[in-house]
Image 1 (cartoon, rainbow, N blue to C red):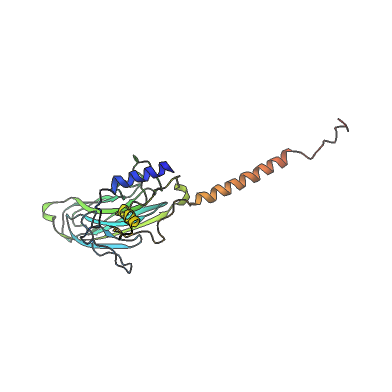
Image 2 (cartoon, rainbow, N blue to C red):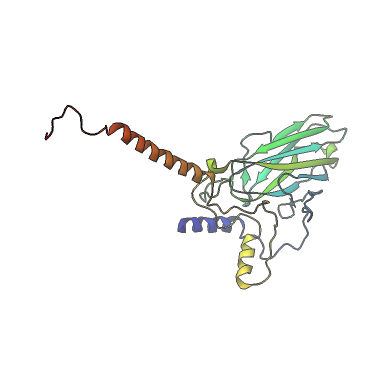
Amino acid sequence: MRAIRVLSAALLTLGLAAAPAAADSSPSPSASADGKAPTQAGTSFRTAAEMEQGQSATASASTGDYLYWSFPADTGQRPTVKATVKLPGSHAAQTWQLDVYDGLRRHQSCQYGAATRTAEQGTSSVELACVLRTVRAWSEPWANDPLPGTYYVRLTVLDLGSADLGLPVRAEVRANSAEIGGAAAVDGSLGKPLVPGIAVESDTEQDGSKSAVLSAIEPDDGWSSHWWSSRWVWTAVGGVLAALAGIGGYALTRGRGRPAYVPPGA
């Protein structure tokens, strides 16, 4: 338990301690209280538009802008992020890229999917996709494993001619997850999910003052407690089967008592 607490503290210090001690006063695009997806994107990590998994966030922008969204991902989930960019009727070849970062703002590689694609001249749209690795409950400080918390999506164009700079585009981003469960379970857990402002919230709760949280998004059923997974069920089933196998093996090998050919008193 001491090692787990040290790891959690190190991860939070690495990526979250640099956040301001109070919430950012500048408003950031976010989903409305009734659960509707955001219709605009942020321009940086701090102003990333907050969306829930399963929502289709949209944004109107200009070619060359950096567009940011954020969504929550919990332990045992394998997030898939898809983006569609609708391009103007006349344009030269453009290369678009979809990047995903975790709560420590570490770039996460895609298991598979076309995260970078080139839209040839005159193409009406380009589609991008990135399937991340399964989110783990715990990781070594030096590892780059996905951890539970906020994930950031950045959409931008890499290769752009000066004639196309500033042309209007329409972007749509969606994030979904497959529940992997106990197959990806590990021993240990983080003290807190990697959500911006979580350290500030913890400090303010101790002295009773108003908490300041930079991100309010979380999974619909809340953050997992990290101790339960389907691996517990399979462990119990395996133990029962092993016990039955032992009893059956003993019953088959112990025989039926004293052999008939052994004389009495022998």
